[in-house]
Length: 400
Picture 1 (tube, helix red, strand yellow):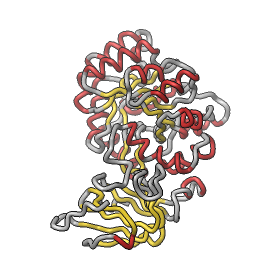
Picture 2 (picture 1 turned 45 degrees about the vertical axis):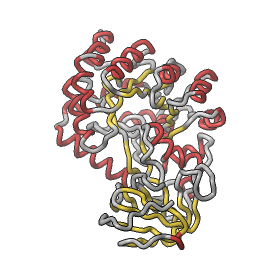
Picture 3 (picture 1 turned 180 degrees about the horizontal axis):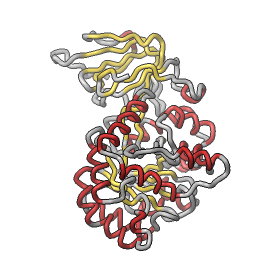
């Protein structure tokens, strides 16, 4: 467990007196999926974890921080968000809470506001949400374009996002752009042609909203295939509002994640359980904010699927940046245990981003961690709505 380089000139810090340290490494501690170590310590060297173990055995370091009997967890990995936007949809939310159903069409309102915003306004809004998320323990986030729907506006959204995260997703196929409402085929041609060429250099991922009112299975296949040919890795909005081809397409194309997974057939569940490449990413904030059917996490977990939790932070259907809130929802309404929900919000999110250096606290991993104002991670679900994250380290630096 000790990789500390005693000859290094890199600054080192030990966090001691941790009541419960979640490592997400089952070879450590109690041998559970969370790899819990009691009365623990963790050593940070530069931007990496150098050592974890019992507090009494911690090596000497340059600096020390006393956790005072509180819990430490890996920083949350928010693997699905839509943070490059302008405006909000308060009126839509208010109407929906008064009885109007949610549909994919409300995105057009944000498209109009985003197109009208300056680059500076979009970046300021992005940074505000990132700071908000960081203070709640999120240290890695993915974010998408999808509110521009023109070549220029999609490319600038990705350029703005790429300045703040390496996990950037091209979502020109969020909905058919209003300008192409009468010719969806021409819009698919744009998304897979000129728009893709302008956006691919700024993104790692390609995504599509495969849903009634957005893109059907054939269109989604064409978009993801074109994105993959341009060097982008597929992920997909799948089966959110109704049963559809999204999950099966995700598994067939070996997408990194099928996101939402609310309406699943037995065949969909089996496909996700048998896949070694596609993570089922559940987004309970969307169901909370739309009063929709909850995804059945228990069904997926019992089948053997890999599950991630994410916020889906966006101005229309899930305007929350709080991973702790999503954990509480997953435990209360999606039949996850507190351990499963935390794993899914950290290591599960890392799996959905195909990363091994985040979502875990083991030697060599990136030093992204959160200190809870509680003795156990279970309090994240046990005390919903309470701001339990009291300190955050991101890449080894105290960030909140």
